[in-house]
Image: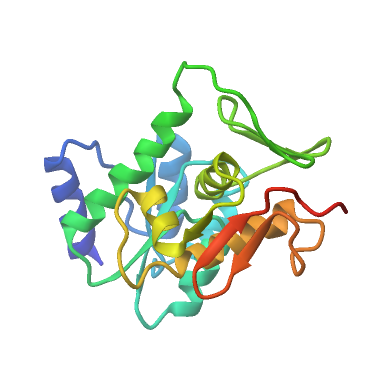
Amino acid sequence: MESLRSLVRSYLTQEGFRVVTAANGREALFVARQERPDLIILDLMMPELSGLEFMNAYAREGDAPIIILTAKVEESDRVLGLELGADDYLTKPFSMRELAARVRAVLRRADKASGNVASTPLRAGDLTLDRDRREVTVGQTSVDLTPSEFDLLATFLSAPGRVFSRLELLDKLQGDAYEGYERTIDVHIRNLRTKIEPDPRNPRYIVTVYGIGYRLTADPVPA
């Protein structure tokens, strides 16, 4: 773990990023509280406090996007990490070049949120998304979304009725679509439905187009 941490720190530093590391989960939580990072790269296999335990604790006090690192055999943990709010994941072993690309893609999304150009809120039924404020409401109720969930919903609302493949959606989130990672979208969609749909099992907004992907219904079915 130490060798991987050193390698990641060295490579990302060479790429121009300021990198702060921690040797275990408890130290990572302390560092995150002190440094208030723009992004967190989180190994699920940390001592003292696991990556999943870290996410549970950090979610109560921070909102930096998270990229999780996991072994291929840990599929259930990978899915759970996404369900807890991680924006992306990489399976070990991975290339430093791919990691840097994922980091840049997540940070680009964060930069969009800080733009000064006013934009018109997007709406469908009683669902409203304000890109400038990064706010989503269903009726009068505010909904907290992860950066990935927010950007997915904005993509759908920008083109109601259009069918998006999983790879298209993945490309819009990351800037690069990698074969084998498109199922990440399924987890994000499931989480998104849980937050915006009256009945996630019978969605009225984001519907599945079997064999292709997903689309936002142009005219949501009334509740």
